[in-house]
Length: 59
Image (cartoon, rainbow, N blue to C red; front, side, top):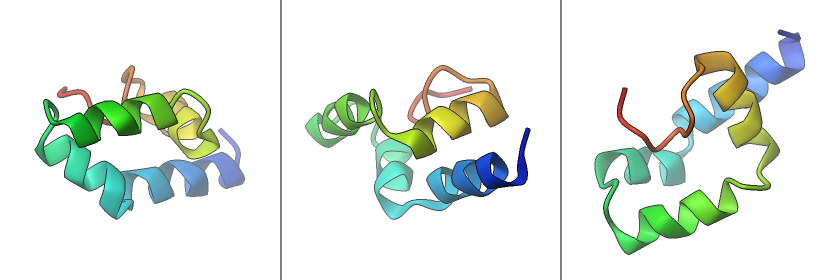
């Protein structure tokens, strides 16, 4: 993985919005962020780096 994608994945991992959705995965806010994640390049990098389907799903 490139250094840029690593930085983008790290941004998603520490993003306050994504952190909140990981704390409350069933909320309406989490569903909104899931929609946002369909086109977010940071989420795509996170998915490649961590190998989970969503930054908001539980391991």
